[in-house]
Every structure is written in C-alpha cells, then in structure tokens.
Image (cartoon, rainbow, N blue to C red; front, side):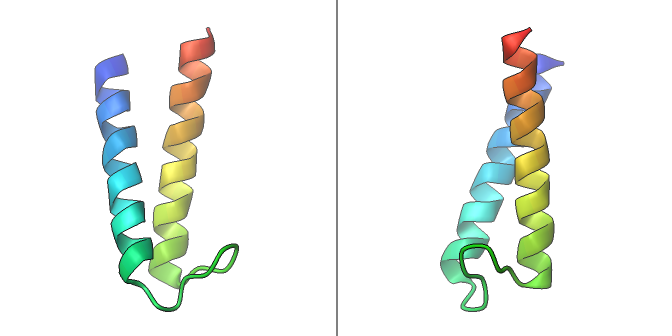
Length: 55
C-alpha cells in the first residue's frame, strides 16, 4: 500500500509540475480549473504520504 501511495504521489507531482510549466493561466495561488484539480490531487496525496510516514 505504501509503495502504491508513493507512486501516486510522485505521479501527481509530475503531472502538476508539467501542467504548471505549460499553463499560462495558472499563477501562484490562482489556478485554472484543470490546474486547481491537479493541485488539489497533489496536495491530498502529499498530505497522505507525509502523514503515513510520521506514524
């Protein structure tokens, strides 16, 4: 399970970075609709991964 969580977290990180680099609408704190969804997924998986490592 932890390996799957890590893989999903890393995938979300790369997807978000790729989108952010190409999207002219996304700005720090203000994202396009697709960017907001990607950022939320990245943040949710990052929180889950970091919280799992602490326990």
